[in-house]
Image 1 (cartoon, rainbow, N blue to C red):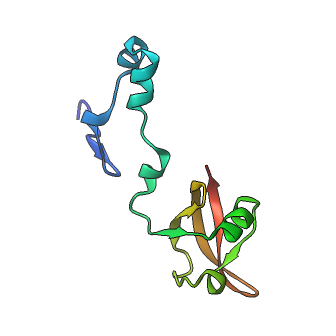
Image 2: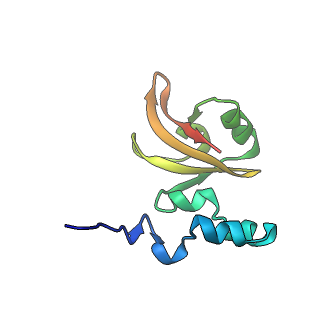
Amino acid sequence: MGALERREACGFEIGDTHTLEEIEKMNPDERLGALVECEKLFASYPDVTLPPFYSNLCMNGCEIYQKKIRSSFAVGTLLRVYGDCGFIGVGEVKDYPDGEAIKIKIFL
């Protein structure tokens, strides 16, 4: 094999990319327009939207118990977590002494 080229990964196709040279030629507005929202990377994950009180707790590092927000994702599930400010990050459902809870793994 002489070469290997990845043409698509996680819903992104090679046609959606830009070379460094192309980016260097763009003006600031074009560069901003070329950016992809980071939450799009996790589009295949189910999502949960937290009420304002729990959104604040989550952003301060607290685990959010599913019984409090009436969700029921399985332990180990990775989630896109949203709050009153929009996308917070990626959370994972884990077992805790008081029950199953969502804890942010990647904070954005």
